[in-house]
Length: 255
Ligand code: NAP
Image 1 (cartoon, rainbow, N blue to C red):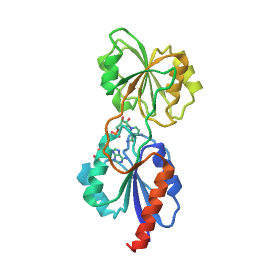
Image 2 (image 1 turned 135 degrees about the vertical axis):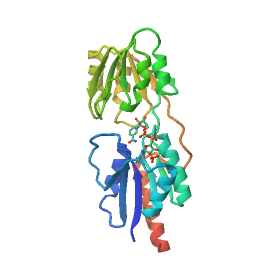
Image 3 (image 1 turned 45 degrees about the horizontal axis):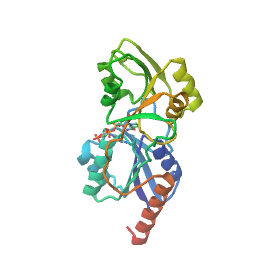
Image 4 (image 1 turned 90 degrees about the horizontal axis):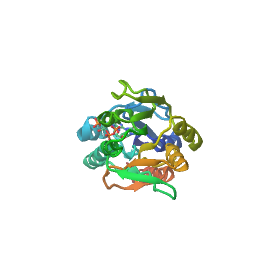
């Protein structure tokens, strides 16, 4: 009996889960991407790309494709998708599991100022000109146009088009993971005096935080948005166990 799984992805955890489940005869796994990255990393299972059309669209998709289990392995800042997943899974009667990566916590030597949003981070840079490193999604840079007195270094996976409408901005296109050593060099070369980051959690993008600590730079850390309370695990390993349990219980019930 085949158990059909839909993984909402765009994260390392989603890809790792797909790697762990690919090739299993008892599962048919599809990974869903938002389509934000122009040339996404190759995935080990079939991929579908683009929005579903809100809660109703996702619920229809779950029914039409006879999905037996939904895994929300989206980015911690993709809160809308997580809300839609919770509502659509409930509407379609499909079991849902979220993989919620723990947030980063400040450690000795960190100089964080936590803010509620990217716009609040742009505001918190203050009136005096600073040299800020922005490692944010390229769709999220607009608030910094309201603070053109600062010089920006922007790192993104895809080029920022059009560029930010500010007098001084430099761009680096690169795909993580990065090392703290590389990021110390980058921040030093560009004479950065403040880092702006979302509290993504995980290892792939932590290097800039470790680098800031090493150099003694302040970090404007954007807090995570609230996500719905659904059954959740922190690791891919636990998600595999949930899938095993789901597949076994369907087998037992003969559905
Ligand atoms: P979002 O605001 O939660 O989602 C907006 C819409 O995009 C959703 O309502 C859905 O459209 C579609 N969508 C999102 N994830 C999807 C997926 N896995 N499969 C299919 N459709 C998906 O999320 P976002 O706009 O992608 O990003 C918000 C924040 O998350 C940003 O801070 C971004 O940098 C960060 N982030 C996202 C990803 C990612 O892969 N999505 C990766 C890294 C970081 P419909 O309502 O039409 O279904």
